Length: 447
Image (tube, rainbow, N blue to C red; front, side):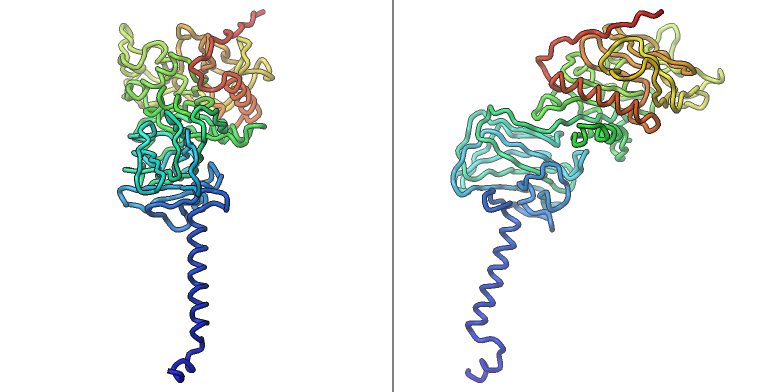
């Protein structure tokens, strides 16, 4: 035995020390994966991906999507759980949850989930008011009906939006009634057809880039959603958005899935949220105001001139009389590039802009007349064809602009209008069910 030990380069105590050191290293690595810092909560999960440990969801980085800043469950697991716990019991009355691994679009996030509480980590109680059947929100604040005394808090995830769930951040609050401060964020609504949205078309994201170029708004957050997800239920959940931007689109109005616009009409009628519609988004708001989503829509190609279904929408003009199919813009007259627009009303949207200013245009369709309850606040300038350039709801800050502030080409005008709109939305308190009617635009007296 002595000779065997003599041939070993380590004595028994040395081997023990080496084993202890290895064990200590494993503990350190495990702790690094399972807690944020000495004072933060412990964390664990049913599974996690490399470099995306449970502790990433409590690191204080609300919006980072790098693996180290999030928790990601193992792909294909079918169900998952993530939990945190503290050394001593504490009160929890509200839970802020930030989902997904894309900075704008909800992707790889919990879909069906419920928060659970426990005092011992063995017996769990479902917090029924936190149950979500089909998550649409990247940012969600759960307010419990009453404060819960607990040591363990677990998110039970039954299905995911994508291949696996991701938590960007989880934060708890002791009082269920406490005002929770959250950064300003906007809803970016893609009005494209659902098939184009499913292909990942980024239409609308330019609004975020523009807003972040504006002084004081460099850190505004956003969630990019498809039109069918945009409704009162979506925007009324906390934390509530500051405003919404509706993108343009490509297909004709007779070809649209009108039911996808139902939620937008609901928000248009209530006026609870400041909104900006651009080009096709503006035309959609006008059609909703004049016709509604439940009645059929048409376009100039299929329209019966004696019985038009949506006469508020038209084309600038055509270069031939030959019949073409709906959605074929071959002979349409387009308006593209920088054009002159002229204010016809005093509105805070145009503060610090000259009476005539340049904007970017890209359209062949247009709004034909002002819907009831709206005002025209901008018209065409020299060498511009479309008359109704910008409209506003009489008693709410909901705008329909034929031009594109989100397009490159007139940066100073775009930034000024964006800053003004964001300030307007901020002054209203963003989504606000108790919002009062606001002053109507003051029309200029033409000389």
